Length: 137
Image (cartoon, one colour):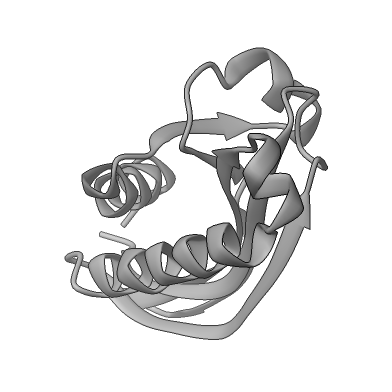
């Protein structure tokens, strides 16, 4: 799985949950995100690889799952965070069954509020290690 296939797999795993998908440098999130719920993928970082003809590459993935925050959500964010956490678990399942995915490890989910854009959103930062198959030819 090359980098383009990786991003396609991540998009395919999140879009069925109703999230718009954007990726790039974290500083450009506010200008790119236009609809909610939104999934923002920070630029994936390759952290390990192995094998000779057939091997693997491990990426560090940071995803931000975001929902627009109305007045009620701001007063009671737990219900929104619970829904986003459930969406994150379904996303991870969808991703795990994508062709070429070997393992998902070191999962961390951190609730956030008003940290990604100036639109006003509640979110969850999801980070994990993603090991995928890699063919050298």
